[in-house]
Image (cartoon, rainbow, N blue to C red; front, side, top):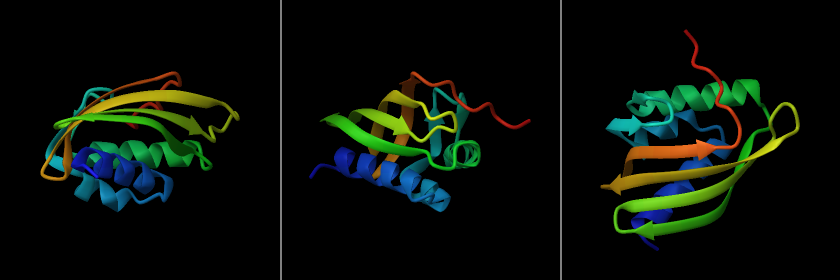
Length: 116
């Protein structure tokens, strides 16, 4: 199994297990999230924690995954929103050294706003 597939599966598994600490192992120190317009693994950790707080039953199911060298593209179903809805999410990210370095994404569900 290639590195991109493994890291994608690990990322979604960590989200579903509510393992916020895993973000430090999954994302590079200089990780860049285009959807969150933020950097560092802590931006993912904080976003995940907000999602879990707002949607206690939220879960991601990996539907499609394509890898091409260091690039990974996924299509997922996100279910368990507080209002009972589900969403489709498309993500593309780069992988190097077993960690995600940069991520782009689109979702049919609006993001939970950052605290501030």
